[in-house]
Each structure stands twice: as structure tokens, then as C-alpha cells.
Amino acid sequence: MTKHITCVTCPMGCGITVELNDSNEIVSITGNTCKRGEVYARNEVTNPQRSLATTVKVNGGIHNVVPCKSAGPLPKNKIFDCMAEINNANAKAPIKIGDVLVENVCGTGVNIVATNHCPAK
Ligand code: SF4
Image (cartoon, helix red, strand yellow):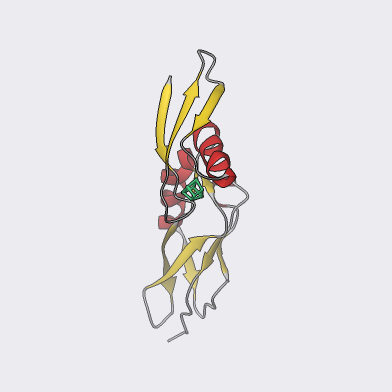
């Protein structure tokens, strides 16, 4: 099987081709300009991950929501479950940048942290 992916590690956006055998093992990686592209392609094929940026509802704050992000990459196949857990979460004002709003989201070991302040009313 052949997979075509675009490396998003830097703005060059190299097109990378990954050849897999019948056991889904990587046989070759071509098209990357540097080693980082090979690492990206290998991860993208074997263990794709995504960072998440969204908002969490706030109780008692001057705003109803606060922006947040995952403190690290999340498994791509858990993104929708993570969003559901984040959508059900409520944070209590006051909130500072870096506060953990959802701990260990979906058991991934990754926290969801505030990326802005939200003072109390
Ligand atoms: S392969 Fe290297 S040069 Fe190409 S986009 Fe990825 S990081 Fe950038």
C-alpha cells in the first residue's frame, strides 16, 4: 500500500510517500527533504497525533468560556472523545493561563490547559 502525506513540520510542506507491505510495515519513506520529515511520516502512519485548541465553559467568570489547548499531542483516534469530555467540563473562575481545566483527558495522560485568563465576576 502507498500513503501520500504532507509534512507539516515546517512551511516547506514536503510531499512524502510511504510504502507499506502487506503486514502494514513501513518499507520505504521518500520525498522528505530532512530527517524530521521521515520521523513525522513514520508517526503519522503508525501513531497519528493531533494537538487540540478549543474552549471550556466557565462558571462565575466575566466570560462564559475560556480558550484552552492540549498540553501535548493527543492520539488522533481519540480527538472526538476528548472534545466530548471537554464540552462537558466546567471551569471555575478565576482562571489563569496554564491552569489545568481538564486533567488526563480521556485517560490520554494529557491535560487541557487554559491559554488565557478569565477573572471572576
Ligand atoms: S521534510 Fe523537512 S523540510 Fe520537508 S516539510 Fe518536513 S520538516 Fe520541512
